[in-house]
Image 1 (cartoon, rainbow, N blue to C red):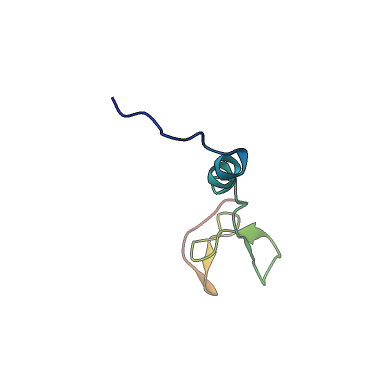
Image 2 (image 1 turned 60 degrees about the horizontal axis):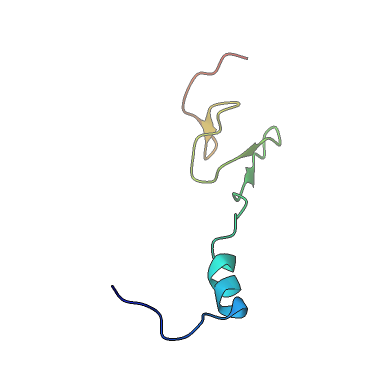
Length: 59
């Protein structure tokens, strides 16, 4: 089996691990009621998408 010729440095390992950090999701604010939702998706709270009522939601 293949073995490494040189020891991998701590900085190199940290760079690799640093690329896998958790990124918080980007959220949009609804202009009608101010709720947060994922962009380019229907707002699950009120059922609106781009200013139109798309789905009926029980309040």
